[in-house]
Image (cartoon, rainbow, N blue to C red):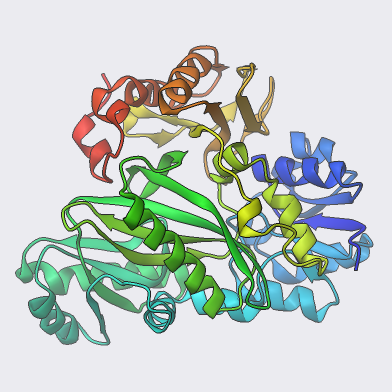
Length: 448
């Protein structure tokens, strides 16, 4: 079926990005907005905006019934969930389908399969994809016994977690019980699921993920990998593609493993299979799969020329995969910086408020995805992402230099941002050499 009108169940830069592609495809858009986002840039870009509740996301963007009813009431035939909020909630996908709305994403069953980390781990094992040595823990004593077998350092991780919440590192066995109790309590509060499991901690690891597209019938292709190792508190800050410094053999195996995992699920739509590359052992392990579009998807679009949102829509319409693997060509190198409203001098504390001036960079090879302009509000109710600056060059050195100039040309007044942090990273010799591990940001020390 041809999709005529899409209900965008999200906000911020991803909402603006989805609206842009829909416009290019001749598809109308209706945007869900909270009371805090009525006057936002995405609200003005959409063909129509409908208020779905008060500012807090629990009263608006997370209200499944309200969103479904709003989509139906505005004559939409499909829903795009973006990322975050309800994008990886099977009940939302199921409610959309039960209401006769096309959910632009995977099936509810697939979301369930990868949303539970223990089940995803078992699916990886069944697909012959390497997993980090670990164990489940139904009780604190189970965790203590398992830790003794796995050895330290290790991670206690929430089964339903993400973004570093419900995750604790343990360096000595005597701390296992307390870490399990803390992680379990945090997971219960954040996700409504107190279950945890244990994994070996890889001391020098790289976070490398694979972008995949699936037709829902076993057909899967990949669009290359992304290195997301520049992280703070498990939150990605800078992403790039291709991942430099990996042997051709390891990279080929990683790509094959990601495709194989998605094929096992008969995956539908765009997804990302995430891996931890163990630098010391020269191997990789499955981490998880994100069943949605990723914040960092523009770097993949830059080097492949493929509009991932357009492919999501085509698959949702039943067109299947419009590309064969041999059709996917990789051109140059792309790097993305996430520009957040946060203060690096105050331990990256959020910095909500009104933006007096927003001057974003322009130029050949640059792309800016943002919902912020002069006078825009950064509400205190949501994440602090203001936009993303993407540089695409003939090689990594060119992309880094281009991004450095782009950051110098960016001027945001009224709220604090992490631009200085990005400038420091891009100028650092270790980063410029490539192949940094996830502990890199911790070694940088605080900004002064």
